[in-house]
Length: 195
Image (tube, rainbow, N blue to C red; front, top):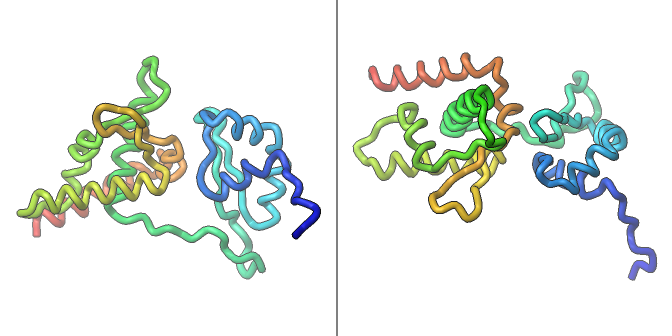
Protein backbone atom coordinates (compact mmCIF):
# COMPACT_ATOMS: atom_id res chain seq x y z
CA UNK A 1 0.00 0.00 0.00
CA UNK A 2 1.26 3.44 -0.93
CA UNK A 3 1.64 5.54 2.27
CA UNK A 4 1.70 8.78 0.24
CA UNK A 5 -1.51 9.26 -1.75
CA UNK A 6 -1.05 11.17 -5.03
CA UNK A 7 -1.38 14.94 -4.81
CA UNK A 8 -4.50 16.50 -6.26
CA UNK A 9 -3.77 19.45 -8.55
CA UNK A 10 -6.43 22.14 -9.05
CA UNK A 11 -6.23 21.86 -12.85
CA UNK A 12 -6.38 18.05 -12.96
CA UNK A 13 -10.14 17.79 -13.51
CA UNK A 14 -9.97 20.26 -16.42
CA UNK A 15 -7.09 18.36 -18.04
CA UNK A 16 -8.92 15.06 -17.78
CA UNK A 17 -12.15 16.54 -19.19
CA UNK A 18 -10.26 18.11 -22.09
CA UNK A 19 -8.81 14.70 -22.95
CA UNK A 20 -12.36 13.29 -22.97
CA UNK A 21 -14.37 16.08 -24.56
CA UNK A 22 -14.80 19.84 -24.80
CA UNK A 23 -15.16 21.98 -21.68
CA UNK A 24 -18.14 24.36 -21.68
CA UNK A 25 -18.73 27.56 -19.72
CA UNK A 26 -21.97 26.15 -18.32
CA UNK A 27 -19.82 23.83 -16.20
CA UNK A 28 -18.79 26.79 -14.08
CA UNK A 29 -16.33 24.97 -11.85
CA UNK A 30 -14.30 23.54 -14.75
CA UNK A 31 -14.55 26.74 -16.79
CA UNK A 32 -13.33 28.79 -13.84
CA UNK A 33 -10.38 26.44 -13.30
CA UNK A 34 -9.61 26.56 -17.04
CA UNK A 35 -9.56 30.37 -16.94
CA UNK A 36 -7.47 30.47 -13.78
CA UNK A 37 -4.85 27.92 -14.92
CA UNK A 38 -5.03 28.48 -18.67
CA UNK A 39 -1.34 29.20 -19.21
CA UNK A 40 -0.31 26.17 -17.15
CA UNK A 41 -2.81 23.94 -19.02
CA UNK A 42 -1.61 25.22 -22.41
CA UNK A 43 2.01 24.49 -21.48
CA UNK A 44 1.10 21.08 -20.08
CA UNK A 45 -0.56 19.92 -23.29
CA UNK A 46 1.97 21.63 -25.54
CA UNK A 47 4.61 19.24 -24.20
CA UNK A 48 2.73 16.30 -25.70
CA UNK A 49 1.88 17.96 -29.02
CA UNK A 50 -1.63 19.17 -28.21
CA UNK A 51 -3.00 22.67 -28.58
CA UNK A 52 -5.64 24.17 -26.29
CA UNK A 53 -8.24 26.10 -28.29
CA UNK A 54 -10.52 28.39 -26.28
CA UNK A 55 -13.56 30.12 -27.79
CA UNK A 56 -14.34 32.64 -25.07
CA UNK A 57 -17.27 34.25 -26.91
CA UNK A 58 -19.00 30.88 -27.43
CA UNK A 59 -17.99 29.42 -24.08
CA UNK A 60 -16.14 26.27 -25.04
CA UNK A 61 -12.60 24.93 -25.15
CA UNK A 62 -11.11 21.78 -26.65
CA UNK A 63 -7.82 20.15 -27.55
CA UNK A 64 -6.53 19.56 -31.04
CA UNK A 65 -3.43 17.85 -32.31
CA UNK A 66 -0.81 20.53 -32.91
CA UNK A 67 0.65 20.75 -36.39
CA UNK A 68 4.06 19.18 -35.86
CA UNK A 69 6.96 19.14 -38.25
CA UNK A 70 7.34 16.07 -40.46
CA UNK A 71 9.18 13.34 -38.58
CA UNK A 72 8.53 14.84 -35.13
CA UNK A 73 9.11 12.19 -32.45
CA UNK A 74 5.68 12.71 -30.83
CA UNK A 75 3.05 10.19 -31.95
CA UNK A 76 -0.54 11.30 -32.58
CA UNK A 77 -2.66 11.13 -29.45
CA UNK A 78 -6.01 11.74 -31.16
CA UNK A 79 -7.29 9.49 -33.91
CA UNK A 80 -8.48 11.29 -36.97
CA UNK A 81 -12.11 10.30 -36.82
CA UNK A 82 -13.48 9.91 -40.27
CA UNK A 83 -16.80 11.66 -40.25
CA UNK A 84 -19.38 9.57 -42.05
CA UNK A 85 -21.46 11.17 -44.75
CA UNK A 86 -24.51 10.92 -42.49
CA UNK A 87 -22.79 12.80 -39.65
CA UNK A 88 -21.46 15.34 -42.16
CA UNK A 89 -25.03 15.99 -43.34
CA UNK A 90 -26.29 16.39 -39.77
CA UNK A 91 -23.29 18.61 -38.90
CA UNK A 92 -23.59 20.92 -41.91
CA UNK A 93 -27.37 21.34 -41.60
CA UNK A 94 -27.18 22.05 -37.85
CA UNK A 95 -24.16 24.37 -38.28
CA UNK A 96 -26.15 26.41 -40.79
CA UNK A 97 -29.08 26.44 -38.39
CA UNK A 98 -26.79 27.67 -35.57
CA UNK A 99 -25.45 30.38 -37.85
CA UNK A 100 -29.00 31.65 -38.51
CA UNK A 101 -29.83 31.32 -34.80
CA UNK A 102 -26.81 33.47 -33.85
CA UNK A 103 -27.72 36.12 -36.43
CA UNK A 104 -31.19 36.72 -34.96
CA UNK A 105 -32.00 38.62 -31.79
CA UNK A 106 -33.72 36.54 -29.11
CA UNK A 107 -33.54 35.69 -25.42
CA UNK A 108 -32.21 32.16 -25.90
CA UNK A 109 -28.48 31.45 -25.68
CA UNK A 110 -28.76 27.80 -26.73
CA UNK A 111 -30.20 26.36 -29.90
CA UNK A 112 -32.40 23.34 -29.30
CA UNK A 113 -34.07 21.28 -32.02
CA UNK A 114 -36.42 18.33 -31.94
CA UNK A 115 -35.38 14.97 -33.32
CA UNK A 116 -38.24 15.06 -35.84
CA UNK A 117 -37.07 18.50 -36.98
CA UNK A 118 -33.52 17.19 -37.55
CA UNK A 119 -34.87 14.22 -39.49
CA UNK A 120 -36.92 16.56 -41.71
CA UNK A 121 -33.94 18.86 -42.36
CA UNK A 122 -31.49 16.09 -43.28
CA UNK A 123 -33.84 13.65 -45.09
CA UNK A 124 -33.30 15.21 -48.57
CA UNK A 125 -29.60 14.32 -48.32
CA UNK A 126 -30.19 10.64 -47.55
CA UNK A 127 -30.83 8.13 -50.33
CA UNK A 128 -34.48 7.32 -50.79
CA UNK A 129 -35.46 3.72 -50.24
CA UNK A 130 -38.70 1.82 -50.47
CA UNK A 131 -38.33 1.06 -46.78
CA UNK A 132 -39.10 4.29 -44.90
CA UNK A 133 -38.28 2.66 -41.54
CA UNK A 134 -34.82 1.68 -42.75
CA UNK A 135 -34.24 5.21 -44.07
CA UNK A 136 -35.25 6.74 -40.72
CA UNK A 137 -32.95 4.31 -38.89
CA UNK A 138 -29.98 5.51 -40.97
CA UNK A 139 -30.80 9.12 -40.11
CA UNK A 140 -31.27 8.24 -36.43
CA UNK A 141 -27.90 6.45 -36.46
CA UNK A 142 -26.26 9.63 -37.86
CA UNK A 143 -27.95 11.73 -35.15
CA UNK A 144 -26.79 9.27 -32.48
CA UNK A 145 -23.21 9.38 -33.81
CA UNK A 146 -23.31 13.20 -33.84
CA UNK A 147 -24.39 13.02 -30.19
CA UNK A 148 -21.49 10.66 -29.38
CA UNK A 149 -19.09 13.11 -31.04
CA UNK A 150 -20.38 15.89 -28.79
CA UNK A 151 -22.11 17.89 -31.54
CA UNK A 152 -25.51 17.33 -29.92
CA UNK A 153 -26.69 16.82 -26.35
CA UNK A 154 -30.09 15.47 -25.37
CA UNK A 155 -32.11 18.00 -23.41
CA UNK A 156 -33.07 16.25 -20.17
CA UNK A 157 -36.71 16.33 -19.17
CA UNK A 158 -38.00 17.62 -22.52
CA UNK A 159 -41.48 16.33 -23.39
CA UNK A 160 -40.36 15.55 -26.94
CA UNK A 161 -36.93 14.27 -27.91
CA UNK A 162 -34.94 17.51 -28.13
CA UNK A 163 -31.25 18.18 -28.60
CA UNK A 164 -29.05 21.13 -27.81
CA UNK A 165 -26.71 21.96 -30.68
CA UNK A 166 -23.34 22.18 -28.93
CA UNK A 167 -21.14 25.07 -29.95
CA UNK A 168 -18.17 22.77 -30.62
CA UNK A 169 -19.93 22.26 -33.96
CA UNK A 170 -18.41 25.62 -34.94
CA UNK A 171 -14.92 24.12 -34.67
CA UNK A 172 -15.85 20.92 -36.52
CA UNK A 173 -17.69 22.74 -39.31
CA UNK A 174 -16.08 26.19 -39.71
CA UNK A 175 -18.26 28.78 -41.42
CA UNK A 176 -15.69 29.28 -44.21
CA UNK A 177 -16.06 25.60 -45.22
CA UNK A 178 -19.86 25.42 -45.00
CA UNK A 179 -20.69 26.36 -48.59
CA UNK A 180 -18.18 23.89 -50.05
CA UNK A 181 -19.44 21.12 -47.76
CA UNK A 182 -23.08 21.83 -48.63
CA UNK A 183 -22.24 21.90 -52.36
CA UNK A 184 -20.55 18.48 -52.04
CA UNK A 185 -23.51 17.02 -50.17
CA UNK A 186 -26.01 18.44 -52.69
CA UNK A 187 -23.92 17.17 -55.62
CA UNK A 188 -23.84 13.72 -54.05
CA UNK A 189 -27.61 13.80 -53.45
CA UNK A 190 -28.24 14.96 -57.06
CA UNK A 191 -26.07 12.27 -58.66
CA UNK A 192 -27.90 9.71 -56.57
CA UNK A 193 -31.29 11.06 -57.68
CA UNK A 194 -30.31 11.06 -61.35
CA UNK A 195 -28.93 7.52 -61.35
